[in-house]
Length: 281
Image (tube, rainbow, N blue to C red; front, side, top):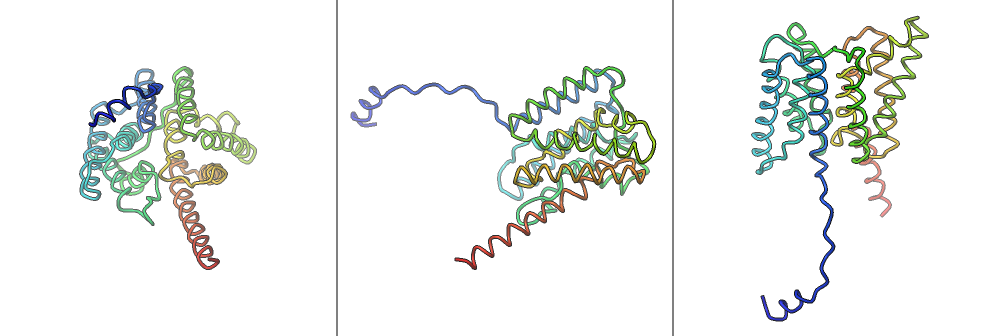
């Protein structure tokens, strides 16, 4: 360093220290860990800790291996942790292999099923649906409810709402929840079932993962805020149709259908605008 540089640095105005900020990529792992602890400590909703640990380790291992092979560097593992712990919570099976296989399928789908550099499905949603369709005799999904103790759900909702507000995704969850309640009232009118029976599923721990992680996934949602709200409404609408058809895993199937279609439509419109802009210029 030159004498002039030293002099300049000694007389420079000191910079105001920045406030410490949490890396947004760690917010989702924090929230899903909160869901896990609230559900397990209150109701013991995991099949077992060992199965959940296997899903997490598999997801992280597959992410590291494929990410390193494809991009030549170690990937950030927050997404893999979320996928692994989601699989550990959502999958129900007496065997261990479905947890490892579902976690591996979830992560691999991000790298294999891509269009124009984007993966179309939320990884965990794809993995869960794949297992429900291909291994229905060995796999089911979480169906435990919070019961009369609503405190864990309230804690998760408050924590989740704060985090989604921080990352600008809360409008998606609120649109879906509002739409779900409206369609629950419609289903109640159509079927004659009590309204509370139709709306009750959204209070279960499975839905906490669905509304806070799957439908808000930044990598697999469309860009404009109005379009994100529209897609959330359509997911709730298709789910309601599946429920009327007695589909047990209606929310997973609805997102599996609506999500990639919305992404493909957005890509097609974006390409069309680019072509038109090129012609105009």
